Image 1: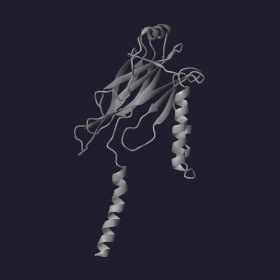
Image 2: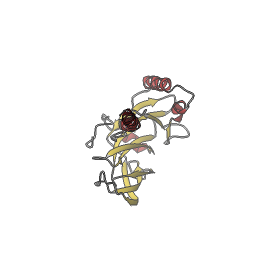
Image 3: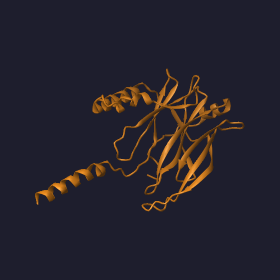
Image 4: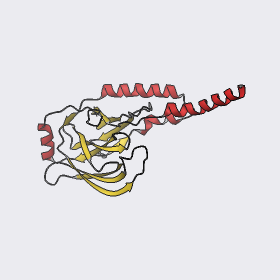
Length: 230
């Protein structure tokens, strides 16, 4: 009897971490933190809403300087979290403290109804055989072209793997006096339940007329989780 109890306890011990770590899937929207005038950067925070307690991912879009229009992950904030010699809980506390300080020094940006447009080309399709959720039966490789408004507006391409051939512009961000729009493009990234989305940030060069249209456009609120798909 004692041996049987030991075996049962051992099996439960093996199964419990897997169950506790399981996630239900979730959206990964980009939160707009604000603009750092001294850096010429718009900071964005990818929220990971999958129940895993993963830290959000910090990015910035350069709207000034030699890298204007490019988007970067702030990888330096995460290095010590992967260092086995660093106390993980203390590193997490330092992360949240740095994020709080960053929020305090940023200025608000203007979000507007999108003036930029998107065009999607499906470059590849792959059948998906998922017995848990057969509704999501195709994986798409998408080439997303984001184009600035007006005749001759510049176009920037990005590629993603998605579970729907359609995308939306979740927000268009403008910074006064800057010739770059930061466009948040939303696509279905996870084939689970009703589907979950992710955002990518794309920097778009603007001409003088497109800049003026952005100045004249009214500001609209942007809420990362305000979507029809949950």
